[in-house]
Structures are given as structure tokens and as C-alpha cells.
Image (tube, rainbow, N blue to C red; front, top):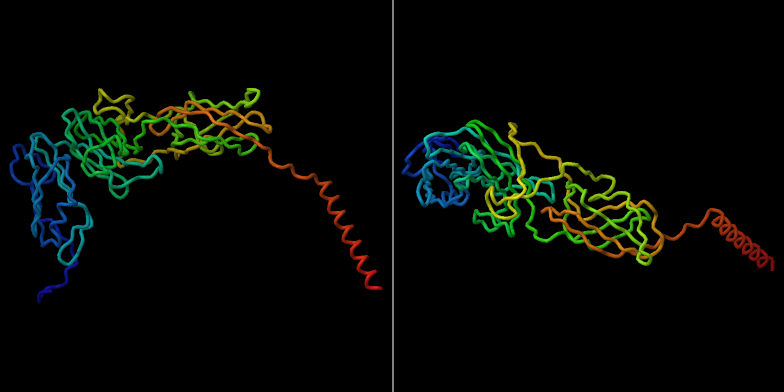
Length: 388
């Protein structure tokens, strides 16, 4: 420490930023930059962690006290840009910033005060997930981008009024482009109808899957309850109106009545009548090529609240209307939906053997009495032997 100075416990602070946060700068032709009050400990790390929107290529030059950035293809007119340096930027004494450094501006004539945010969930674990890429695109195909934080939340500000599609995906190959063939993803529509609108989203990542679920095996939990195992996760919130289960005697063909069936356990399964919406990016990109639009609404609450959704399962529980008897049964299922809402089922064989009968109480007492008599006769024999 130089003589005459006190210890430094403060993280780097911003002293100048260009363009100013929330400003409109039509015709911008200079580098955007942020300048700090002290040297940075590792300027090169800024280029690795900085988050930019739209999701294009940028040139980042980090010096000791400043960071300069501009798109490789130059600033485009009428675009909202967001530049964000996550927390963790350090100075020479390793003091770390605790809050992100973010500034956004537009190269158009007007800046909008809209907010689009929400959360991204993993459909299999029903938990929020971090480091998930989110892109919001309108008719001009500009990929406004954000990344979910440690709590699984994201936010985009200043988007122009209009209709958009939001895409959330796990960017496994780090190319900032959704690969729907192998990357878990979800999507939904966003409508910003005025310049101060707030919209929240709930996006649920599901893995790509082009095959329907297939019934693998059937097991009798007792004489009235069956468990059907599938090769794929099933959607527990989907309606079961089109699903069916059939159980018949393998020899005579006589059918056993089916009282009820649910995805998961009978005791805790929930069957909402409204069901779920389909994934909007199953085939192609854009409103015209996306089947089964899911409405996200125009909620004014921000940040969002977790949806109540059941955890997916690989099995279906079935309750029969009549107890099984010993024998071989043909079991078939149809109309069950996986997480990609593909319908499937299949056929399998069930061998049912009733559990061993429990001995009646009288016979157990008789057996104990017989054992007792045997013990007494043995003791008498021992006494006679002792007398001899």
C-alpha cells in the first residue's frame, strides 16, 4: 500500500458510461464504453463474461480502467441494446462488485419503458434453472437476449411495442442459437401493446423427443392395483380423456373392469381439466409455423410467481373394479402423453400370483399346543433318566 493511503475495501465503481442508461442515440457510430474509478484486476475476463443483447457478435476491448464494446457489424438503427457485466468484477486488491453493471439504450428515435421477464423451470425436476438463454424475437427477427440468474429469473427492458415470441433453451454448444434437435427448450408468445407494459412468462424446459411413450411392463401391487411402467416421462397435468387401459384374461379374453387410472400414484395424483399447452417450437420458427399457440396473458405482476405443476412420472397407477385371480393377463394402454405431448402406449403381459395365505389363528394355536406337549414329554424323559 503506498504511504499515506488507507486500506482499500471498495469494489470498482463506475464513473462514466456511454451511451447513458435509458437514452436514445440515433445514428450512433462510436464505441459504447464504461469507465471505472480504479484499475481492474483482470480486464481480459470482462470479454468472457459480458452479456449482450441482441445476441450478435461484439468486439470487446478491456483496458485497465475502461471497457469498450461495439457490434462486429456496427450499430444498427432502431435497435435496443443491453450491455451487462455480471457481479464479480474485481480490482487489484480483489474487491468484488456485488451488483451487475448494466446499461441499455436505443439507436431509434424513442425509448420504451416496457419490461418482459419471468422464470425458466426444468419440467422434469420442477425447479428453476440458472444460465438458461432466453431470446425474444419479433417480426424483424432481432434476437433480444437475456440469461437466467442464480434464481432462474430473467428480465428484458425497453423492447419496442409489438408482438414477440420468447424462446428459452439450454445453450449446450454456446453458439447463442437454439438447436431444437438436442437442446431442452420451451417457447411462448409475448404481446407488448403499450409503451409501459409489463409481461411475465413461465417457460418450462423439456428435452427434444420425436417418439411417443411406450408401455414397457405391468406389475400387480395387490389384487386391485396395477403399476404400468413406460420408457418415457409422462405429463401428469395432461387430460386423460383420450387415454385408456385394458386388462383381460390371457386365456379366455375376459376383461377386468378398470375403475380409475392416473399418472403417478393414485393417492396424490391431480387431474386438472384444463390440461397444458403444447410446445410452440416443435416445427419451425415464427407465428405461422408454430402449432398450438399457448397464451401467456398480460399479467402486471413482476417478478412472476411459480405455477403449480405436478412432477412428471414414468408410471401409471391403475385401480381395478374386481380383484385379480391367479393367472396370466394381457394389459394394454393407449393415449398417454409424454412431456412433448406425443401420445403413445403399448401391450404387455402380467403374471399374477396371489400372496401366500396366512395361517388361521386356530391352526397356529394347535401347532403351538403340539409343540408345548412335545416339550413337556421331553422334560419328563429327562427326569426319569436322572432317577436312574
